[in-house]
Image (cartoon, rainbow, N blue to C red; front, side, top):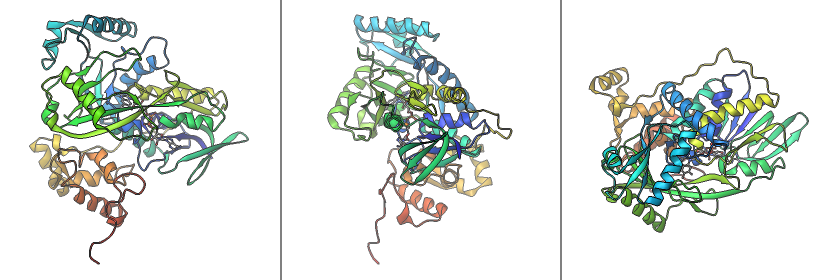
Length: 477
Ligand SMILES: Cc1cc2nc3c(=O)[nH]c(=O)nc-3n(C[C@H](O)[C@H](O)[C@H](O)COP(=O)(O)OP(=O)(O)OC[C@H]3O[C@@H](n4cnc5c(N)ncnc54)[C@H](O)[C@@H]3O)c2cc1C
């Protein structure tokens, strides 16, 4: 019998598992994908929002504010790629300036370090901006992060402290069973005292499994361009347009922690949470906005496009509670933006709710708040590179030439506490295949290394989910 089963291992489920790891509990995490952090956590803007946007009184507001402080601390402790970065909400008109002033007042009310910049100040702060920009909201309480590494790092600590992770287990039902619940999946059942519902875009479906039908998932997609590192240094801020009347934060231009540039997202309804394709008309709109903010962006340097679907519902706020329909289920639902920023605080809140619902939280004496170190060869100086190669010659063999990723790093990634089993999962762990050629050269080598380290045939390796096998047979027998 488990004490807690967490459904979903995006950043929210990982943050809950990370919190619960400090207590003497038997915790299981059930995730339908073949890796952690593959839902909204994989495809977002990667901004740790400062907290000027959510209105005081919303559930998300204090969680956003606490989440970014905890997130900064966790990133430092667990060596997650994270960079503090000023952000700007830019204004092209007097009407936009009114929005800027509203956000400024909200920022002050939320205790955020905000300023209003005039024309001269904003161009001094961000010289790449369109000369037509007349002012901006400024804050330096924001940051950018590697979102999937953040989630994976927290999940790794949980696993190292005893949490059991069940990948490729899709929850299909929840059965009440006396003082316990049985979580039914397509690959077996789990008896548990409590359930935490962290299923992102499917949280409303999980709620319905216990008769709680308060929420309807609304699927709002966001598409992005990723540009080569040649473009990444063009801006030194996260640049937002003014939010619209529906609360959409607007298209942004931002560097990533790896030095690329992203431009996006839109916010348009799509058929389902699984609608992850991009389309030319939407990307053209995004490109036009990006060029309006920063005219010097060279879109010939686009290396990839991606899309994510927001875990939004009919409630325009996080829904975080003990289910009124089932006192043994905690909901962490409607986790739209700033869900990444808030995640660590949501993890804490989930532990409090579980305690309130009767779960005893006794500290685990053996708890260790750490994970194995990560070698990032590309960021080492010559001395550092010599030192790691001396320890392990595999760090001397470059496999991904675009990102300077070595065989040593790929082997490390495959042997981490949560083992990646697909090419995409390896890419998320160590960036092999994330550069300008998008794996054109290194994929076959990574494929071989992955098969070798997992002790399986190359035919058994997938690119990503389900039947995305890369090699389907031999051309010559
Ligand atoms: C376009 C876009 C831009 C965003 N930008 C930002 C930003 O810059 N800053 C910010 O703070 N937030 C941002 N967000 C929001 C942020 O990404 C989300 O709030 C956060 O990732 C939610 O994490 P989650 O773990 O709740 O959901 P997810 O990451 O979606 O994880 C849910 C998990 O549950 C699993 N699951 C679902 N159903 C089942 C089932 N039946 N059985 C088993 N497992 C199941 C899924 O496979 C998934 O892995 C953005 C979101 C989008 C889409």
